[in-house]
Amino acid sequence: MAEQGEKVEIAVRLKPEIYDPAGEELLRSAAGNGLQGLAAVRINKLIEVTFQPGTPPETVRQTVEQLQRRYLVNPVVEESQTV
Amino acid sequence: MKYRIGVARFPGSNCEQDCLHALSLFDRCEPLPLWHREAVPDDIAAVILPGGFTHGDYLRPGALAAASPLMDDLLRLIGNGLPVVGICNGFQILAEAGVLPGALLPNSSGRFVCRDSYLLHSSPTALLPGSQGVLKLPVAHRSGRYFIDRDGLRRLQDEGRIILQYCDRSGGVYREVSPNGSVVNIAAVANSSGTVLGMMPHPERAVERLPSGRDGKVVFSGLLDFLDSCSSQIR
Image 1 (cartoon, rainbow over the protein chains, first blue to last red):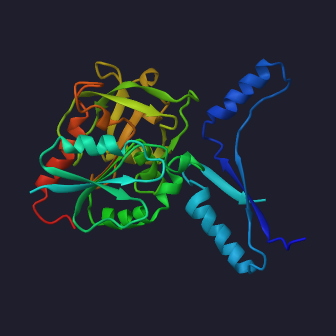
Image 2: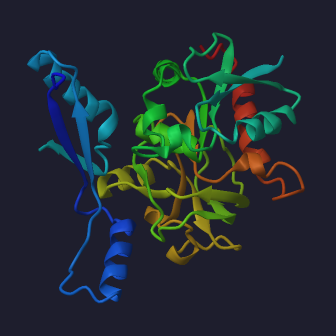
């Protein structure tokens, strides 16, 4: 089996105060179809990043940090964490 | 003298031809397409970031285009005073790049909106001076809900940087006339020096009698008038 590189998962969530129409629509639809007990639905993102085998841990850390800052997160409306 | 106005092209741009056409209606300018992987030529007097779905709108609209080599170059030139107008996806790119404050989120209706809209010219700015009253321009977007936090909104209001607001035919600004749920119906904002304008409506689709009238011409003439007024070299 080929060697696997390190895998990092980054969760990107809308800040709590940001209205999420997609989540609202899912909530409306699911509740309208009879699913019980739903109070709120928020649709967020999980980004899976796989590194090349042998990538030094410091490079992984720096690249993940740059990915989040430069691409994955708009700090005006989103927040992120590695999971 | 003719101004060379660059119109940026990214993978997924789809309004660049309309922008080039709109600019070609003015004798004073020579429109020029700019590719996203290349630097901005030295003799460019202004740049338009047109609408579209750059990079498929993946991640967030404008996010991937904001990280392009052309935008790196443009950030430096904007710092030197280069005028830039971002239209629709171009506005989203400018917000993602941090050139303009706030963010553009999916419409509160969850739907793509494509229709004419009325816009109140709320504040004069360098690229759209005077008092234009109510303009009729088309909008076509899925993510036009302008969001900014309370402090940021106050700053925009205090500094007169809310340039256009969705309104009714007579200029009334209220929530029901907004196509997307923007904070205080914001449709266009400027940077602090007024040299960068981001707007969701499409002025390039309203430069001739058909299909949407000629109200959009003021955006292009405003840009050209600004260049006329800059007696010294822009760069």
